[in-house]
Length: 202
Length: 127
Image (tube, rainbow over the protein chains, first blue to last red):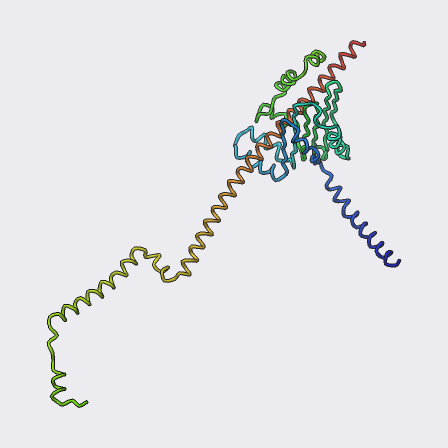
């Protein structure tokens, strides 16, 4: 009986120590990085997959190679990337609708419900089966992280940017490096929309 | 065995070696000279490498150094090529990520704008 008590006390100390050391680590780890591993299974179902995983080292390497271009436009690109700590994009395009489950989206949304994240844009269209959400994580007066969640019947996109990003600088890249301009994108969107939707919008 | 004085005198009397001796001696001398000159000629062909014939261990060590240096250079070149490919891939990935981000941001804002216009129209119709 005495031995069990001794063990229990040591276990308690061990547990307390674990909590003491794990809590600050957990707080430190509370950054803008989302876990997107649950979407890996969609790779086989999607007709087209765009998967980008760039952590800090790879981004710094990308900056080095952008610098090599000695191009004013490349300098703009470098300005955006240099303060980033990670860029993670998962974009799946399907031939058939409903290839991903609501649970897949909810798993991402649950992470975005964590403290630090705030939803700045939400647009739901039940008729079209679209969910568009933009979340930001503040870092002082600046944006320390961005998450974009676009769920459409035949497409699912999750963008997760970790680090300080200036969205104005990002929009300044439109028309460069193959980044579509707002005008062109708007036209493409109109082309993609069904006649009913276009009529409704008009 | 007993030798008489006459026998010894007969045996030790000077003999004429004949003309062939001079020729044989001269031939031997020429042979020796030829051997002596042949060595420096080979030395002249590879004057720097010649000591290696005498020191096989040194030759082996030099070959090993050359092999290691060659291997190291090859590896460095391979790593450099890999790094270039990795960097170019990172750059293209970064551009792709920003392209998708920008496109999706525009798409969301366009949809928000469209639904706001729709709502405004509906409100206008009700009023």
